[in-house]
Image 1 (tube, rainbow, N blue to C red):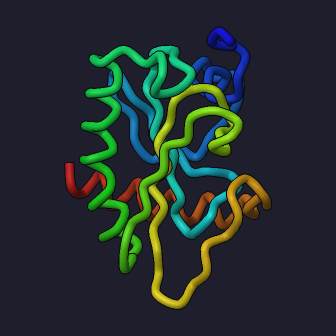
Image 2: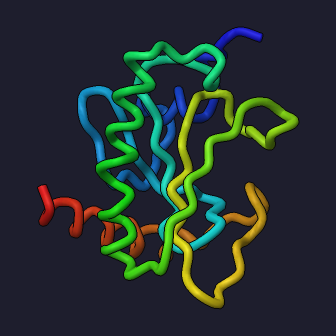
Image 3: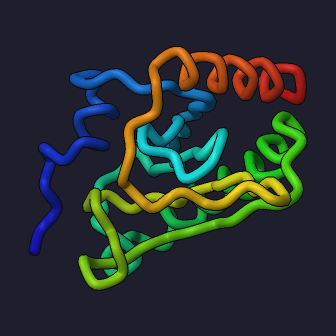
Length: 142
């Protein structure tokens, strides 16, 4: 299978679809998952095309991981989360739903169960509120 330039993340990168952006630099974009597993569930993607770990260029992966490394503690602190779950899925059998490499930064809260992956859309007003909390916190840290 080759990279599909019409996947949902490629459309977000082109500006064809909206997202709740919390961070962007020259090489990566981070935005809220619209079907979050937990409050503040963030997706981090490279701006370069790659389906998953099997075809991403090392340079792009390194840049992607630098952004994940930068944002993870900020997301945890901004939301006062008890922990963080990082996920990266490769292929249908692993549960990958969008074929543009991405990492999930999922804040975890004691006693709050994790929702199922890609199962339920979040209300727009809640996404906006969480995006604002994270964007404001990240801006203060930069």
